[in-house]
Image 1 (spheres, rainbow, N blue to C red):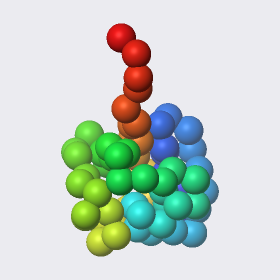
Image 2: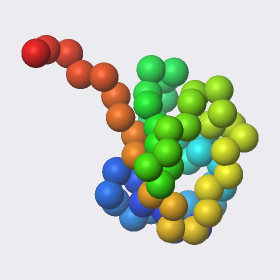
Image 3: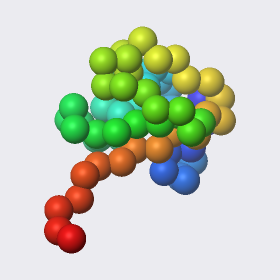
Length: 65
């Protein structure tokens, strides 16, 4: 299945958000995720099913200021 993650296309067999994150080495409860512009909470990632060409954004907090 083809999906966009942070603007880059990936062809993955995974169909759940948590599995995609693991496959792409995104780990940690501190990540913020959105699919097609809608926030997906950490506790919902395991049940959240992706569809072909979904847009996934993964954000992590930054230090500094």
